[in-house]
Amino acid sequence: MTSENPETPSTKPRSLLKSIKEFLIDRFSLEEDKEDEADVIQAISRGIEFRGVNLWTLIFAIFIASIGLNINSPAVITGAFLISPLMGPIMGIGMGVGINDLAMIMRALKNLSIAVCISLLTSTLYFFISPLHLAQSELVARTSPTAWDALVAFLGGLAGIVAGSRKEKVTNVIPGVAIATALMPPLCTAGYGIATGNLYYFAGAFYLFLINGICISLATFLIVRFLGYHQKEYATPEIERRVRQTIWIAVLIVVIPSSYLGYQIVRKTIFEESAKRFIATECNFQYRQVVNYSARFNRRQSTLEISLVGEPLPKDSIQVLHTKMPDYGLGDAKLLVKQGSFKDAEVDLNAITSTVTEQVIQYSQATIARKDRIIDSLRQAVAFNQIGSLPVADLRNELKTLMPDVQTFTASRSLVMNANATKPDTILLVYARFSRQHTQAERQRIERWLQSRTKSKKVKLLVD
Image 1: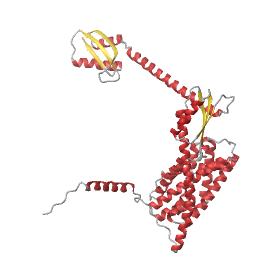
Image 2 (image 1 turned 120 degrees about the horizontal axis):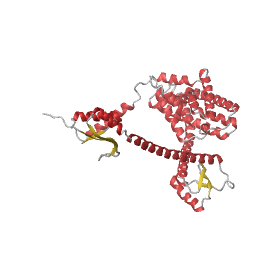
Image 3 (image 1 turned 135 degrees about the horizontal axis):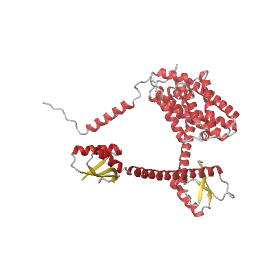
Image 4 (image 1 turned 30 degrees about the vertical axis):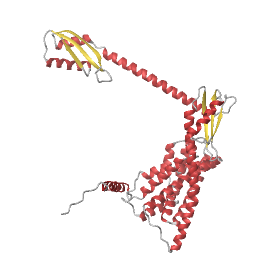
C-alpha cells in the first residue's frame, strides 16, 4: 500500500516563488490587448510623413508655443504640446532600429530634418517680428537641459509606444506624453536664439531637443524589441547583414556621444542641486544677505559664486565655508565670494529686489496669520459672552406660564471638563425650585423646552 508523500519544507518556498512569479507575469504582461505588429508599424509609418495637414499643424503649433514662451503662459505652451505632430518621426526612428528597417529610419530622419528646419524658421520669424524681446522664465528654462528632462522624455517615450501598441488606444496617454516630453518649446527657444543672435540660447535649447528625441527613440526601440516584433526580411542574408551593420554603426555614432553628454548633464544637475542646498543651509549670515549666487558647472573645475551685501564677511568665515563644501559634494568646486556695499561692489539689483520682496511677503504673511489668530480668539470670546448672557427673567416668566408652581429659577452657561476630554464642553445649567414634586416626564418636558428656547445642545436641570 503506497501513500502520497507530504509536501516537504523545501518545496514550499519554491511553490511560493512560482506563485509570485506567475502573479507578476500576469499583472505586467503586455500580451493582453496587443495590436497586430503590421498595424502598429503602419500607424507609426503614417505619422512619419510631414506634408499637408501634418505640416500645417506643425507650423500652427510652433506659432502657439512661441507666443506662449513670449508671454510666459504655461497654458498656451501646453496647448501647443497637444497639437504638435513631432512625435511621429522620432518614434519612427526607434521603430526602424527595432525592426531593422533602414528605409524607415532614413525616411524618419528626412522628415524630422524637414520638421526641425520648418520649426526653426517659423519660430525665428515670430521672434524677429515680435515686439517682446525679453526672455521670460518659461523660455529660459528651456536653455539648459537637466537629467530630469532626459528621464521624463525616456519614460514618456515608453508610455507612448506601449499605448500605441494596444488595440484599444488609451486616449489620455498620447496627450500626456506630448506634454511631458517637451519637444516644441526647445525648438521655439532655439528660434528665439537665432532671432536675437544669442548662440548660448540656441545651442542649449537645440541640445535639449536632441536629448529628448534620442531618449524617445531609445524607449521606442526597447519596447519594440521587448514585444518581440519581427525583423524586416531582405532578399539575401548578405543584404540583411549589411543593413544591420549600417544601422548599428549609426546608432553607436549617436549613442556614444549622447551617453557622455548625458553623463555630464547628470553631473551638472547634481552640482546645481548641491550648490542650492549649500546656499540654503550654510549661508544664513547675520548683518549680511546673499542677494545672488551662480553655480557654473565645468567638467574640470566648477565654480560657485556668491554675492553678498551688508557687513563684509570675515576671512575666517569664508574659510569655514570652504571646509563645509565637501560635505555637500562640492569639494572640487571653487568658491568665490563677492561682497561690499552698494558703492564698491557690483550686485544684481533685480536679485536684491526679488530677495527683499520675498522677505516682505513672508513677514506680511506671518503678521497677517498672527492677527488672524487674535481675531479668531476674540470672536470666540465674544461669541461665548453672547451665548453666556441669557435672558433669565424672560425664561422664568415663560416657564411660569408652563409651570405655574415655579418659585425660584436661574440659568447660566458653564464649561464642563470631562476626565478623558481634551477640550471643555459647554452646558446650560438650570436651577429651579417648585412648590410640588414633578414627575420625570415633566422634567424632560422642561429640558426639551429649554433646549429649544435657548438653542442649547445640552441642558442640565437641577430641581430642589
